[in-house]
Amino acid sequence: MNGLERILATVRHGQPDRVPIVPQVFGHAARLGGVPLRRYLTDATVLAQCQLDAWRDYGTDAMFGLFDACVETEALGSGMRYPEDGYPDVERFILEQPGDVAQLRIPDPGRAGRMPVALEALRRLRQEGQDQAMVAGCVLGPMTLACQLMGIEKTLFAAVDETPAFERMLDFAVEVALAYGSAQLKAGAHLCIVFDPSASPAVVPLAFFRELLMPRLRRLCQGLKDAGALATWLHIAGPAEPILPLYPACGVDIACIDYCVDPGRARALAPGLCLTGNVRPLAFVDSEPAAIAESCAQILGIARMGGFMLSSGCELPVEARPECVRALTSAALAEV
Amino acid sequence: MGSPANEPASRLDPPASGAIDGPCLDFALTRLVQLLTEGDAAAALLEARRVRVSGADGSLQVVKALEAAMDGMSAKCTAEEFNLLEIMLAGRAATLVAHDLFPEGALPSPRGTVVIATPEGDVHDLGKNLTRMVLTSKGFRVVDCGKDCPLAVMVQAVAREEAFALLVSGLISPVVPLVRQLRGLLRECGLAPVRLVAGGAALKQCTAEALNVDFVAGDAFDTVRYLEALRP
Image (cartoon, rainbow over all chains, first blue to last red; front, side, top):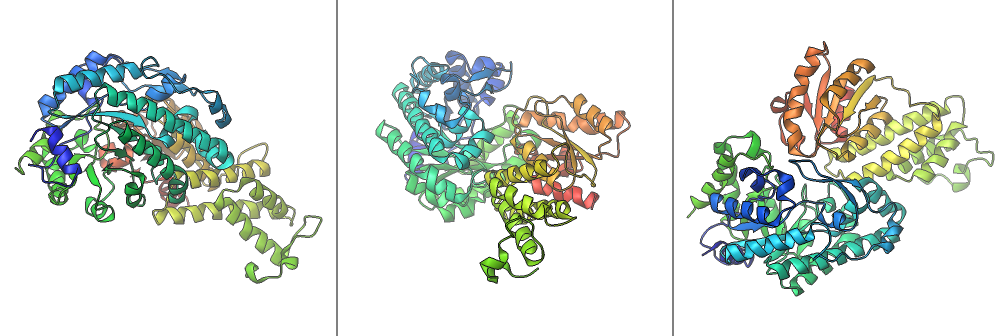
């Protein structure tokens, strides 16, 4: 089996030849390739080459197109700050108040901001990868994009003080995600990860997720499937246990679980989901390879039951130690 | 305290003048704590004003209600029901009431001064702001050095403000090595006894030993509990 076949078999709760290895290698690929993050995030050729090199070096089963939380908001007009070797931050949010969302237009993914960089990188990854590995794109989920348009503090208060306008922000965010995600799938992504950390139960209560976010996530997942995604993948960091049972009703196939979630409990809460996780991300910086191997051994005890991909609980830190990442891949390979 | 829920409504309603006392005051205080906890800022403000005109120690009662509301939120967090939105709403309500009570200055801060900051390279300051709001309501004076803050600025603020603790909040992993330097910088400035507390998504993945700090807080209320133990 190649990486793509292995992941798809796992998502369908079939029988892969081993547990898929999908550490979330995003900006870490730039550090591995000796490239400043800023260049990696703005140059499709560099990004694709770094991802291909990391994939071959680590022997993982997936490659990831552009991943930072600012692509959409930048394309919509927010002002950015680019550190030389760090992820960009929003310096000036495009929205002052939620009602202003009516003035925004869905960006053209072929022209707006760095969206074309992501599309070109995905095209190259698909072409070079030749379907040996899964090529994953990324869109921000509705809650996270809303926060990226106006700032998280203001957005959370708006959710309570100006709920109808806030809901229009969420609806707009879904439309942006569908336009950008569809373009990514057309460019070559096998699927798009919906990255929505601001929808975490650490940020909003369960009722908020159920009433305001679930219907939008359902619409987004269905739209991505209609646009050709091989599966839907939701990434919500933090203590996601209370919302995991709701994922199937959102149309989610694959769910990231963070290091603070017990994999056995997650499996019991959502038996139909394909789970991916959940080594503590900072362990790849501050621990030894033996400790990573030990963590992986515990997770693999659950993963062997099927429907589970071995990964970090969230993004691998940019400064992750390569020997620690290799300890993760070795742990999965040793299972064969 | 009586059981306000069983009292006839007419007895619980404050006099038209707004002055209240006795069971009405007990009820108003309970209701104020509830409104603060629910984050209903406008209603909490009205209730706090009613309590303030109730007698000579009305303002003190409001301060106690602010503390009680934060204690309630803290208990909720202990039960792992913490979410930012509810804490932010309670914090906003508490801040509004506190500013109304002390329009020209901060709340009384009998528990002493702490400095709080998000280290250089990290612009995510929601956790820091939340912690500041909660600590202020609990009787600490909080000097906020902001986000993307150089270590030297934090240490200078500790010295200048005679703070007994320095709190750092970090969401992203590149700040970890910076936090590790703080102990040495404090020592160099003769501030070795100052307590160091770390929190935030990245920093709470580490042990206190790995960060070279005194305590790693799981959330804002964890910080409060640690500091309250130092300054009861």
